[in-house]
Image (tube, rainbow, N blue to C red):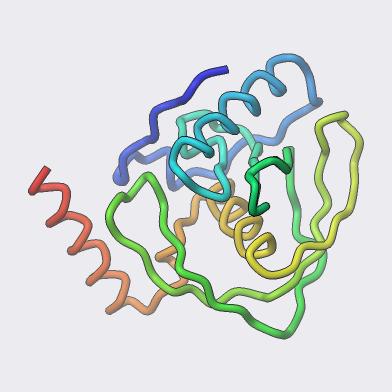
Amino acid sequence: MARRAFLPWGDPRLRKIAAPVDAVNDAVCALWSDMIDTMYAMPGVGLAAPQIGEMLRLAVVDCSSNKDQPLRMANPEILHTSGKMSEYDEASPNLPGVSAKIKRPRALTVAFLNAEGARVEQDFVGLWATSVQHQIDHLNGRMFFDHLSAVKRRMLLAKAAKLARRG
């Protein structure tokens, strides 16, 4: 188990669609372990493999209050979303120092391969739903700020660039 480095914003891999995982094997489980360590060190509530340069459809999420319920997902796919929306402040370690309030469906059903390699369907609500959607966006080459208007997105990216120049 190890903490991994994050790709900096601007790395073209952050805009690529990650490759599906054929099966949950020892290599996938080892990568999930590294991802969980990295997620807890951020601190954060989710991490997708492309954020650390691994172009596989793998994600981890843990929105529990004690940070003791890590969920491992391979090939997550949204099946259903609710019509009700929630708004949370979202950020990414790939673009440090900035965040934005993003509206997403409040609840959803997701199919994925779990840690045992079985295909399961699971419902998520609230912050869990937001984090799962955020990770699936990363797997599809999208960032949280892609949900903002063009003007707000430009302002956020300009602010991030200014922070990066300051060091």
